Image (tube, rainbow, N blue to C red; front, side):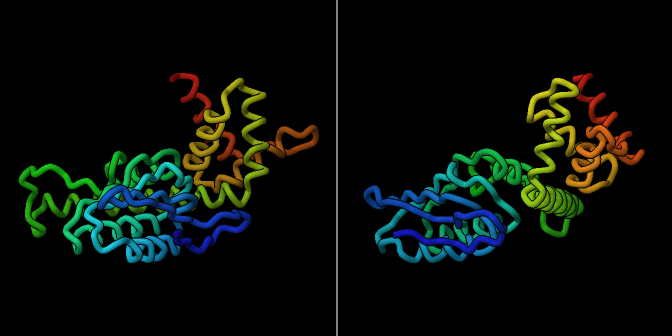
Length: 229
């Protein structure tokens, strides 16, 4: 039996589907799709359907190809299930964009549910604890920015693909390098990613106008940094 989450992104046909099987008293769950709004509810429903004798829950996350901040709620549902049932829970085999989101959130990319090793962490009131909280808040801010840029990329994929093609043809870079150049130029110029891509694509046309000065400067810096690596 599977549970499915609603899908907020337009043009994306497959919601999150959570399949699974039992191996003795161990539940092996296999989410497939996107960790977005509604995914935590789908997981809670799936966990509620597990047999009473379940002693362990392991999730194989290799089928998840997109994750936004709702993915953190998904993980909290799984973590809370383990606490309430006093059982081990894991979520492993992350890759691609979801793995990047875990990195930005400061979580273990092998298993974000893994408990940190005891290290004498300071009390919640201490300055060290406050510094950790500030770092986590900064990571969460970066995570939200990353997700928002990815959403913009989904909505404007054709022009971004064209811009990547322009960079690949002009500078001999790979598709991944072109993507990173566009993103870096967007950050350096404080310009939306799709706007940078559109300006670059227009400038490549025979009668197209050059990109705005701040975008030209940012592209030059991003390209120079690539050449120096």
